[in-house]
Structure formats: structure tokens, C-alpha cells
Image (tube, rainbow, N blue to C red; front, side):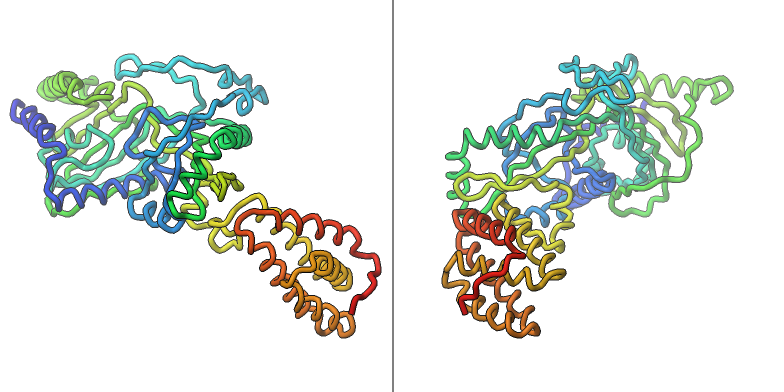
Length: 453
């Protein structure tokens, strides 16, 4: 018995002292952990943190491609360039609908949790799937997972390798209204436009992003079951998914008929030792052994306060002059789901968004009423009267006489429009001029026009 307790203490003493090869292995495990959380359709917060709330704003200075590469390399994005914390009114997001909803009546008391006296959290509940994993002590016991109980369990089993199951327990989530957050961000950005513009200029980039956290997911603890595996070596891995359907919650060895008196005594001593180790595990509400044998161990670890395991949010481009663009969901952007949609995620501004709507309106009109679309194209080209539209006007004149040339005229008109507004970059007066003239031309699309050519 003493040897087993001594082994647990040795494991804690070497926690984090690994070779370069071991660190690489640990980084891989951290990535796998974050990818597992990401499979639940949220962005992993790594390490788990208490101080992350809806309304937190971070500056992202890397390009979209670099962000995506980092995201895939590490499985998470560090949130270290905090800009501000927007004031949120939770009543906008939580209100009485079907259930009587008290979540918007903020602030709530911060809960303190322990294995012996858990305190309920005044937030909506959430649930995560169970995760299975393989753990190896080769190269160091520190598994880079945010769970202190795993190395303790491995130490108790004296196992180089083990398979296991993790359940994130006491999960909660809460969110702020995204529309209100965006309005608050615009107000903050207006007051900090000069600083944002200077930061963008100093970065040498065309666009940066402000990341706004809109929802967080918290967990109050974890339940871990480790089962001794063959000593075959290998690296630690973790995988999401549903493990084989477990039996009911592990029954303590002290239950009537569950184990011998010697086993009961062993379990009691292990829990006494775990209680003594609590001071060596900052942020832990305690580790409790639920069952133990020579081949497996089950333990529950609680955090003294719920910790954020992941979040959702949106990115807002910071453009030339400190102007803000249109919001983009963080998960969609980092997963690259917008890349092939025709929506230029690295060139988003209100002016571009408006121009895209005008292009869509013109293309829809051209598909159904080509003659009316030619009227609009001629009106816009003549009213803007810029060199970009010279070739387009000639093609429009030919198409008015020969319908087979209509599509060529449309292509040259759209190319001229892109060139005209594109000369301004992401935003500028040309966008406004084009919008006013296009709107006027679209309103009179069915009015016969006097031909200039």
C-alpha cells in the first residue's frame, strides 16, 4: 500500500519534467484533446480557464490562412491579445418563453464546488459525449490533458499503458445576444478608431480581425476510468466519440458485498491520500477514488469553480482607417467552410457586402429579363462615365442590335464594375457612387432609354 501511495507522489513530482521528445508527444496529445472538443462544434479553450466570458474581445493579427494553419496545427487558438470586455445585457438573450427563465437576472453568485459539497450553477445545462483515450507513461507521465487525475491513476496502476474513458461532468453554457455584442463592438471601435487604424498600419496588413466571444461552455469536473493495457509502448492519444455503453456509475468498493475488507481499507487510504494532495493541485476541488483494483481504477475530479472548456464567437474585420466590416462566425472561418462559397472572407466590408448584393440583383435580372438588364448596364455605364466602362458601353451597344452578344456585354459590364469599385480597395466613395447610380438604374430598368450609340 505504501509503495502505491509513494508512486503517486513520485508521479506528481515529475509532472512537466519531460525531454524534448516527450514535449513533442505532449503537444500532440494537447492537439488531440482540442480536436476532440472541436468535434463537439465549439472552439477549444486550452488550457481550461475561468476568466473567459461572453463579450471578451481579442485582436487577431495573423492572416486568415495563418490562423487556419495554426488552428489545424495546435487544435486551438491562444487568446492572449485582449482588447476589451463588452458590457452585456443578458436579458436580451434570456427571457420568459415557454419556461420561466431566470438566467437573465444577473449577476449571479460565482459558485464554489467541491466533491463533498457541490453548489448548483445558475446557468443553462449542457452535455458532452464521452471520450475514449489511450494513455502512455513513456517519455513522461504528464499527458498534457487538463486532468490531474490521469497521472495519479496511472501511478496507482503502475501501468505504462492504459485505456480509458473521460466524461465531462456538470457542464453548463451561457451566451450573450450576438446582435447586441456587435452593436457594442461598433460603439467601442468608433471610440478607438485611431488606435485600431494605427495598429493596422503598423502591422503592414490589409485587414485584421477582432474576435468576440459570444458563448462559453463550462465544466465542473471529470470522471475518469483507466484500465490497464498491455505494455506495448506508444504515444498518448485521445479520440472523440461514443465508447461502448457503460454500466451504471461505478459502485464504490465499500458498498455491501462489493469487495473484501482489505479492498475497502485500500480505497479509504487512497482517498485519504488524494485529500492530502489537493493542496498540490491548484484549482482542484478534490480527487475521489470511486473504485480500484489491480487492473482498473475509477476516480472523479472536481474543479473548485467551473472552468471554460470551449467557446463560440464571431470575427469582425478591421479595415483601413479603423473601420469595421461584417461579422463572420469563428468556427466557419477557421474550418475554411467559407473559402469556396464565393464570399471573400479576407476582404469583407459593409461596402463590399452591399456591392455583392447589387451584383446578385443584376445577375438575377439578366437571367430573367436580359433587355432590362441591358438598360441598367447602359444607365450605370453612362452615368458613371469612367474609363473603366468604355469597352462595356461598346459591347452593350452591339448587344442591343444583336441579342447573341448579350452575355458578352454582361460580362464586360460586370468586369468594368469590379474594376471601378476595386480601385478603392475595401471601402471608399466609389462604392457609394456606384450604389446610388445602380439603384437609380435598377428602378428604371423597364423604361426605354435613348441610345447614345
